[in-house]
Length: 140
Image (tube, rainbow, N blue to C red; front, side):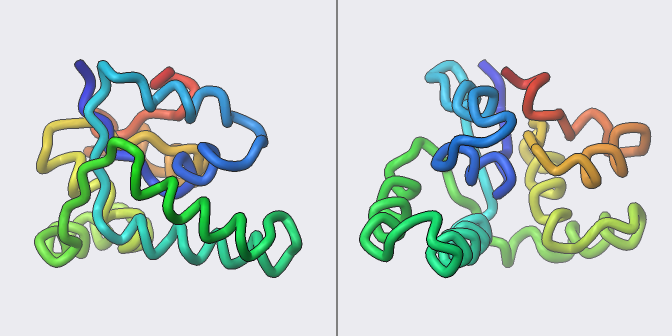
Protein backbone atom coordinates (compact mmCIF):
# COMPACT_ATOMS: atom_id res chain seq x y z
CA UNK A 1 0.00 0.00 0.00
CA UNK A 2 1.30 3.43 -0.93
CA UNK A 3 0.35 6.68 0.75
CA UNK A 4 0.10 9.33 -1.94
CA UNK A 5 -0.73 12.98 -1.59
CA UNK A 6 -2.20 14.15 -4.89
CA UNK A 7 -1.92 17.71 -6.11
CA UNK A 8 -4.11 19.54 -8.60
CA UNK A 9 -1.77 18.81 -11.50
CA UNK A 10 -2.58 15.12 -11.02
CA UNK A 11 -6.26 15.48 -10.09
CA UNK A 12 -6.93 17.58 -13.20
CA UNK A 13 -5.61 14.75 -15.36
CA UNK A 14 -8.30 12.45 -13.96
CA UNK A 15 -10.82 14.43 -16.02
CA UNK A 16 -9.11 15.73 -19.16
CA UNK A 17 -7.27 13.61 -21.69
CA UNK A 18 -3.77 15.08 -21.88
CA UNK A 19 -0.17 14.06 -21.34
CA UNK A 20 0.31 11.84 -18.28
CA UNK A 21 -3.45 11.30 -17.78
CA UNK A 22 -3.09 7.49 -17.83
CA UNK A 23 -0.41 7.64 -15.13
CA UNK A 24 -2.58 10.01 -13.08
CA UNK A 25 -5.52 7.63 -13.34
CA UNK A 26 -3.36 4.71 -12.23
CA UNK A 27 -2.78 6.48 -8.91
CA UNK A 28 -6.47 5.79 -8.18
CA UNK A 29 -5.78 2.05 -7.72
CA UNK A 30 -7.39 0.56 -4.61
CA UNK A 31 -4.01 -0.38 -3.15
CA UNK A 32 -3.13 3.32 -2.82
CA UNK A 33 -4.27 5.54 0.02
CA UNK A 34 -4.89 9.02 -1.37
CA UNK A 35 -4.76 12.23 0.64
CA UNK A 36 -4.83 15.94 -0.12
CA UNK A 37 -5.15 19.24 1.69
CA UNK A 38 -8.74 20.48 1.38
CA UNK A 39 -7.17 23.29 -0.66
CA UNK A 40 -7.20 20.83 -3.58
CA UNK A 41 -10.95 21.39 -3.91
CA UNK A 42 -10.41 25.14 -4.35
CA UNK A 43 -7.60 24.59 -6.86
CA UNK A 44 -9.73 22.18 -8.86
CA UNK A 45 -12.69 24.59 -8.84
CA UNK A 46 -10.36 27.22 -10.28
CA UNK A 47 -9.14 24.83 -12.98
CA UNK A 48 -12.69 23.74 -13.85
CA UNK A 49 -13.78 27.39 -14.11
CA UNK A 50 -10.91 28.00 -16.57
CA UNK A 51 -11.98 24.97 -18.61
CA UNK A 52 -15.53 26.35 -18.71
CA UNK A 53 -14.39 29.82 -19.82
CA UNK A 54 -12.20 28.27 -22.53
CA UNK A 55 -15.04 26.07 -23.77
CA UNK A 56 -13.29 22.83 -22.83
CA UNK A 57 -16.34 21.82 -20.78
CA UNK A 58 -19.90 23.11 -20.52
CA UNK A 59 -21.28 24.54 -17.29
CA UNK A 60 -23.26 21.34 -16.79
CA UNK A 61 -20.13 19.24 -17.33
CA UNK A 62 -18.22 21.47 -14.90
CA UNK A 63 -20.78 20.73 -12.19
CA UNK A 64 -20.51 17.01 -12.95
CA UNK A 65 -16.71 17.17 -12.67
CA UNK A 66 -16.96 18.88 -9.28
CA UNK A 67 -19.31 16.17 -8.05
CA UNK A 68 -17.13 13.40 -9.47
CA UNK A 69 -14.03 14.75 -7.72
CA UNK A 70 -15.81 14.61 -4.38
CA UNK A 71 -16.63 10.93 -4.94
CA UNK A 72 -13.02 9.95 -5.60
CA UNK A 73 -11.26 8.10 -2.75
CA UNK A 74 -9.28 11.06 -1.41
CA UNK A 75 -9.09 11.85 2.29
CA UNK A 76 -8.98 15.61 2.78
CA UNK A 77 -7.02 17.37 5.52
CA UNK A 78 -7.58 20.89 6.79
CA UNK A 79 -5.09 23.34 5.33
CA UNK A 80 -5.15 25.21 8.64
CA UNK A 81 -3.22 22.35 10.26
CA UNK A 82 -0.59 22.47 7.50
CA UNK A 83 0.03 26.21 7.19
CA UNK A 84 2.93 26.60 9.61
CA UNK A 85 4.82 23.67 8.14
CA UNK A 86 4.01 24.74 4.58
CA UNK A 87 5.28 28.23 5.36
CA UNK A 88 8.57 26.85 6.67
CA UNK A 89 9.00 24.53 3.68
CA UNK A 90 8.23 27.35 1.24
CA UNK A 91 10.90 29.52 2.85
CA UNK A 92 13.44 26.64 2.79
CA UNK A 93 12.80 25.57 -0.79
CA UNK A 94 11.68 28.69 -2.65
CA UNK A 95 8.50 26.89 -3.77
CA UNK A 96 5.06 28.45 -3.47
CA UNK A 97 3.24 28.05 -0.18
CA UNK A 98 0.34 26.55 -2.15
CA UNK A 99 2.53 23.73 -3.42
CA UNK A 100 4.14 23.35 -0.02
CA UNK A 101 0.75 22.53 1.54
CA UNK A 102 0.98 19.22 -0.33
CA UNK A 103 4.61 18.70 0.65
CA UNK A 104 3.76 19.42 4.30
CA UNK A 105 1.00 16.81 4.22
CA UNK A 106 3.35 14.28 2.61
CA UNK A 107 5.89 14.86 5.36
CA UNK A 108 3.21 14.61 8.06
CA UNK A 109 1.82 11.34 6.70
CA UNK A 110 5.25 9.96 5.74
CA UNK A 111 3.95 9.61 2.21
CA UNK A 112 4.86 10.92 -1.20
CA UNK A 113 3.32 13.81 -3.07
CA UNK A 114 2.46 12.81 -6.63
CA UNK A 115 2.78 15.68 -9.08
CA UNK A 116 2.73 16.35 -12.81
CA UNK A 117 4.17 19.82 -12.22
CA UNK A 118 7.68 19.50 -13.66
CA UNK A 119 8.93 22.76 -12.15
CA UNK A 120 7.84 21.72 -8.67
CA UNK A 121 9.14 18.18 -9.01
CA UNK A 122 12.52 19.29 -10.31
CA UNK A 123 12.78 21.98 -7.65
CA UNK A 124 12.39 19.41 -4.86
CA UNK A 125 13.81 16.18 -6.27
CA UNK A 126 17.37 16.72 -5.02
CA UNK A 127 16.69 18.53 -1.77
CA UNK A 128 15.63 17.79 1.77
CA UNK A 129 12.09 16.78 0.72
CA UNK A 130 13.09 14.43 -2.13
CA UNK A 131 11.69 11.38 -0.34
CA UNK A 132 8.29 13.09 -0.22
CA UNK A 133 7.86 13.82 -3.94
CA UNK A 134 7.34 11.57 -6.92
CA UNK A 135 6.76 12.27 -10.61
CA UNK A 136 3.34 11.07 -11.76
CA UNK A 137 4.79 8.57 -14.25
CA UNK A 138 6.98 7.05 -11.51
CA UNK A 139 4.03 6.57 -9.15
CA UNK A 140 2.11 4.49 -11.68
